[in-house]
Amino acid sequence: RMFVHACLMRMCVRDWHPEVVVPMWELLSNTLVQVNQPGHVMTGLALHLAHVFVDELEQVCVKAGSHSTSHAAASKADAASDSDSSIDSDDSEDPEESNSSDGDGGDSSSGDEEGEGLELPDTIPSDVLSYFVEPFKNLLCECSSLAVVNRVVEEVYVKLMRKTSNCLKEIERGGDVSSEAVRGGYPFVQLDAIAMAQELFEIAADERTRQFNREKIYDVVSVVEDLAAFQKDLQQATTLPSTPETPNDAPFTGVV
Image (cartoon, rainbow, N blue to C red; front, side, top):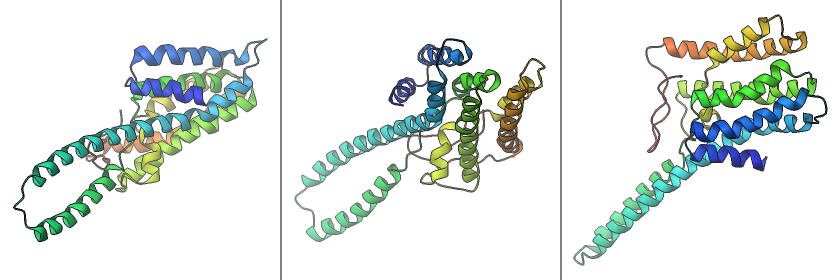
């Protein structure tokens, strides 16, 4: 878990640049495809990676958002310190007015700090997110281990669709940054469920796909299609739901 988290964090701080993402995730992909190869005992590793992937990816994005908040708060504190120094140099200030001003300022500062504490998590670009899911898609479609396939279905696809769907629906209802649903799914809002459902459906329809895997793929397709239908509605709407504005994040204006 710590290794996966560290890898994802490195990609995040490099703004999900392909030069960082591709080589690191290729290594993971090449490891996971060995599950079906004779002589390789990779089932346990595949089960663990599928279990921690979505949760660790979410936590990395939450930390990235918190880092932005801390940086903004530090900059504001420096500016406030300079302003206080300027005020203190004026000895003619009325003490009563100063006390009144301090009281008002304290309330305002408290409100600002509260707002800053609700920074949105980082978001993952659609193409990067699709690339992350790719090795798990391969397991879903080709792996012969029932345990591994079931883990991929529940811990990768179902969890990812649920978090993203809950987030988008909460945004549409006007949910704010503090909402658990918004924060938990916000890293994944650029997920292209429409393209994902189409790709999986085509693989399931391929006669070369094993029947066992085909049935599991159709299970996933039914879950992905629920999110895909919601995304289609967003695309057809004249006004798309937007996230609450924060100092360092632009509102979400649509699905990639």
